Image 1 (cartoon, rainbow, N blue to C red):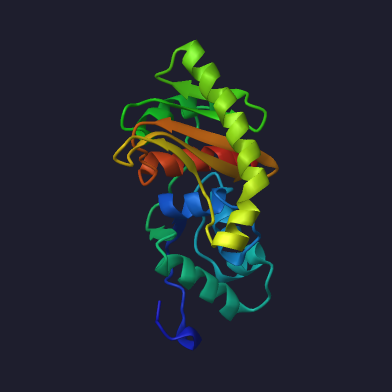
Image 2 (cartoon, rainbow, N blue to C red; image 1 turned 30 degrees about the horizontal axis):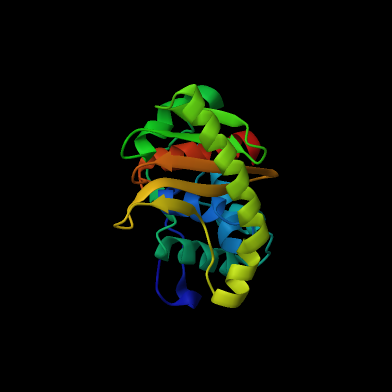
Length: 214
């Protein structure tokens, strides 16, 4: 696309897909912004949709072709979406099986879980039952902290919190927890060791969750 907003044109024949960074941006916040709306609309398709100006405008709820292209250009500039010449499809093993297979790739030690806002575990990997229960209970408390303090942290410190961590003396994460907002569902992704949220498996996980809940 051209850098001049008035000259933006859509490259034909490309299928659009969020990146892992784009998926995290969309799931880690609840604000209804054009950027988040675009990413979620792409991920709700079971296969990557063909880039189309009219469809993009419809997803964004705008009638202006230029506004749609500007939103797409901004998402592309931020590295939140990418275009392919071939179609990519959402994993089709079922949300439970797929989450179990994807979770190990998101942690340096292959351990983690996803829980809902009530502390119910949806999927876990590399953890015994007692450890999973303890982390699920911790997640429920962190969720309450997030809900209670996130707005004040933004207002008074200018800090938008998109995750919480228990760190060692060197500041490296031992346990990390990230709230994920998917449709009406509020989930918590908990990972032991160093997180690897920039991997393709995180995009696949987000795609599965959005198709299931979003």
